[in-house]
Each structure stands twice: as C-alpha cells, then as structure tokens.
Image (tube, rainbow, N blue to C red; front, side):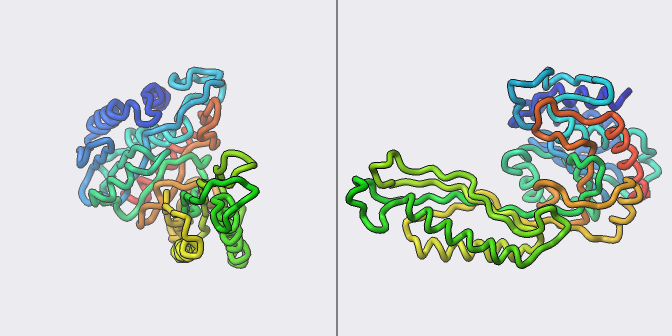
Length: 351
C-alpha cells in the first residue's frame, strides 16, 4: 500500500530535535512537486501550494520527541504488526502528514475551484519556533486550516491556553539559628506561591464544561532551592504553569496578578517561558466535519499550532493518541479513515 510507503519513509527520517530536518523538508517538497504543487517558502519550514488564492491549508510539524531506551522495536523503522503501524511519529504526527499527502494523491487536484496550501513546521515539540516563523513571514493560512495532530479522527475544535513562568527567588544564606527576616528564598517562594494558589477559588467559579477539567488550572511544576536544613536558602527556582480554558482576558489578568506579587516580593524575578492563547472554533462548518468524521466534536488534549492561528481551524488526525509513548503506534484502520476524512474535507471546501 502506498500509504505504508509514505509513512515508512517519513518514520525513517530521524527528526528528533529536528536532526534531519533538511532531509524531511526535501522529501516533502519532491513529493508535492510531483503532484503539481509550487514552493512558496523554504527554510527549516516548507510552504507549498496549488491553485490560486488557497482557501484551505494543512499544518503539520515534522519534529518528533526522543524515543526512550525501552522500546521493543526500532523507533525509526516502520513496524507493521497485525492492525497497527509502530514507530516514532506514527501518531504525533507523521501519521497525519502521511494521510494528508496520500489524500492529495487520490484527489483530482485540477478539478478544485479553490487552492490548497501545505505548511510544514519544526520545533513544535519544544518551542513552536516553526509556526512562529511562518507567522513572522506573514504566510497566508487561508480561511480554513486542518492541523493533523492525533485525535483518533475526532474533530477537535478547541484547546486550553498556556501561560508558563520561571520564578527566581533570591535571599541570603546564613545559619538557620540566626535567620534574617525576609531573606530566605525558600520562605519567600512559599509565601508567593500561597498567594498564587488563591486564584484557584476564582477560577472554579467560571467553568466551561467542554473540558474534562472545566476551569483554569495552576501547576507548580518544580521547586528547587536551598542546600541543607541547617542553612537558610539564597536561591530558589520555581516553574509555574497555568492552563486557560477560554478567555484570553484571563491570561492578561494572571500576568497583572503575578506582576503585582513581584512588587510585593521584590526579591523575585518572573520570566514568561510560554504564552499561548486558548483556541476555540464554533463555526457552523463543524457540523459538516462531524458528519464527515462520523464523530462528535471535542476539545484537543494539549496545545497545538492551531492556538497560534486566527482562522477557522480544525485539529484532526489518526489514532489512537499514543503521542510520546513507548512503542508509539496508529491503527491501520484509523489512518485509512483519516485519508478519507481529509479527501472529503478537501471536496467540501475546495470544490
């Protein structure tokens, strides 16, 4: 099967931390040129289109996360076992890319009244540098975008926003029997975080039930500080994260709240690591997507490149969702269903 050939060739390109980025970009460019697409932009990203004024875009990241040492298979060789395709990236998200490429090959592209643009990115797993680059280059994503993340072919129409901080608290290191008031970095971190956690009560008052956890959440990811129980701490590092359900205004509120706390606790430095808006699409076309996929809409489990776009986005791709897992895989049936779904979406929008 040709879909297996495409997936096999994608999996064999090692794009952990974008290691073989050029190789995969060149592969994708050649494949699409053979279908009649033209290159619009090429760097570590690739943008190609067919037709005039493309209305539909497909966004896919080419990088994958590192495979752990306990895999039962070679993660960079496609293994076909019974009902599944196994390999690093089969789910996240070379499976979605392969399905869309094959859907294009099965489509009469000359019959389309509206054009298609494909945008391939890098660094999605770390810092979203690829999609940010395309936005800086003012790439036009058209009226509609499909992001091929793994969703088990469920039309995903939203995801929580993200606000992450690195907090550095400084103090003075002295014998614990003679502490200097206000000079323990660990103590100041505890006081600071206690005030942050007061936001939880406010967040739970505003709930949005499309999510399993229907309100904004706070996560104190790591706390690192101090050297010994007998000495006050002079340095504490905290990683603090928020997940935002719907309102972009909540991000502004949290930022102002943290800024206010830094003035109350002057020995803290607050640095924003990530700031990504919530994504939500309730356009009427979602009803068509549900009929095509034969599944009801849901929110996406994580943050995707859809969160950076302002057009009519849908996140949908093959499953089950085994992203980042040992022995990552997708079902043969699911990837074939994705091909069919992508073809029907192309027909719905571009014909």
